[in-house]
Image 1 (tube, one colour):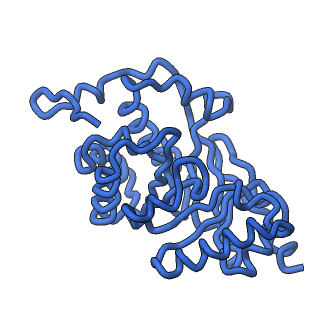
Image 2: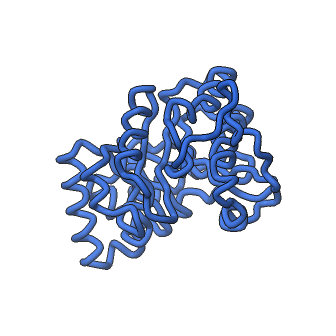
Length: 256
């Protein structure tokens, strides 16, 4: 992305007001072996719970940088207000980051102001369009790691988040897309793909999270094959401006 226009070190793009309001819903990521929530993912929503798509469809190139910055700040502020005690995962748009060190400044200022340690922040790389410059994305991931952040590649195995990205990137975790997970307990093709991804991730030293878990059989198959960090409606739906809890009986069902 082209550098922001700057006047006396100030980024003009930061001053662009968003013509719409938004907030966050939080959905937990659990460790089924430890039987606890380890992370909450911040998900964009409208003020009254409108879908993420209804908000994202209003973000054009002129607003992209400002929206990305506002999402980071809003997520940390809400997490702090709600007393979140586990890690926070925030989606970001790689094409909105023109230079990692400059673009992270608002995030760092917010984290410092709220005493939120950087090692409790994870950034999920998400893209609805093909990444324009993979070298630039690699630079972002490496810079974030040096600053103490964690990174995840979201929706792995679907759309633009495919195997070839791992030639360029070394994220801390891969989030297995729900299209790979849906009905995996009864689908030998999905099982073969996920088993091979588990082996690949292990060889590369990358962790795995399975998303889109809807039934206990999916969760159980994944756990039995070593994917213990999971996310989905089976555990909890996103909670608007609140921290969703994972009922203890979900872990009891898994043990059955």
